[in-house]
Image 1 (cartoon, one colour):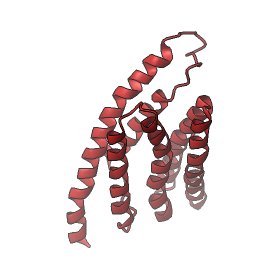
Image 2: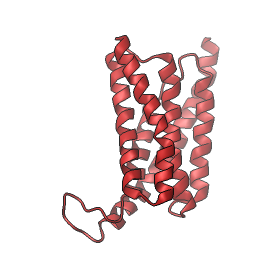
Image 3: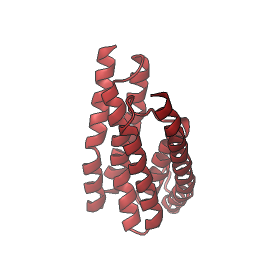
Image 4: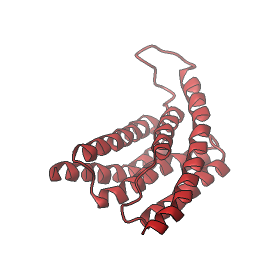
Length: 186
């Protein structure tokens, strides 16, 4: 069980390290590499959670680091898309402010503040929206060339971003409303 927890923690650290290369790939115009790095980050998030559950629960250290690595990995493309005008800056900043607020709340929890179901759904939706928004212009789907495909996928990603923002705000409210109850129990 300890080896599974260590593997889960290692995946979490590796995911955190993907943030800088992802941002550099975006800055260099290497959309394909950026997309692959983001996909690997999303898959590693799912894998480390599965490993931790299989071990009967992750480490407290992993529980604290996991949400932070998600923020690092998601913030890079969000900031890039905001700076490029693909997403409105006010929405990006609102989402990032939510992430900082909840990260601070979770850091104060002895258990690391486990993610709520809506928080997990928000993360999955964010990864999906960002992957669609970052779909490289030159890529086809299943080997079938379709000149309009990148535009359609990016538009789908743009529309998925808004429910992810709503989930982010509603899950933040859920975390904050539960805080007084948790404080009374301690």
